[in-house]
Image (cartoon, rainbow over all chains, first blue to last red; front, side, top):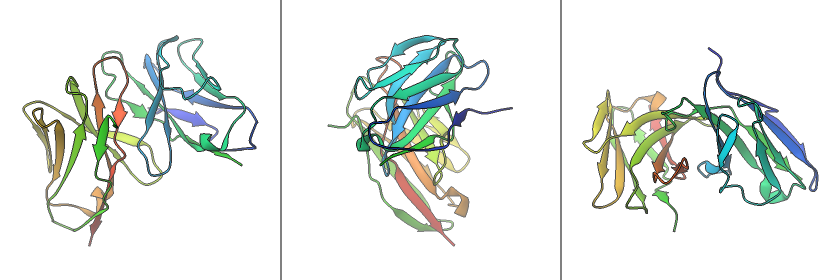
Length: 114
Length: 110
């Protein structure tokens, strides 16, 4: 079956631009996570959704970061006024209810801010 | 102090060797532990959960030491295809945050 998909795969933004990153989770997966992975580091938790409810956004680094999942399926991570330190791979993962540890990751969006 | 710490390596081992990675965690109340594998420029994938009693899956053995707050992953009879970064993951059970270590890089040499 189809896995988690993310788009775009690569994004180059000029400092100050806004970007929107999309995640299509596996059908039927109620849990959705966003992570930020810098080069040479492990993924860092950003936010978590259960269906359309954003239950935890404590990992979002600043108020320039915003995530939504309005219909409990596709999710969008938006970064406003991008900064160079936002350059990273943004990973989306989804999981079944009751099995949040078994996360299926998408291929990620590699964001480069110039 | 980071929630999860791992030796980044790299570990370079010959085929057939046994290699072990450790990972320490800071929150003594943590309940759930996992190992994920990440190939170069690919997404992480769940390798195995770590149970209190330890668990084995083929050539892979995971163990938990709560007293010393570390988990380990042992790979026996290393294969070239085991070359990857191994990520230690801890869920402190205070929510749905999963803390990943920086990963340990393994290269198996022919």
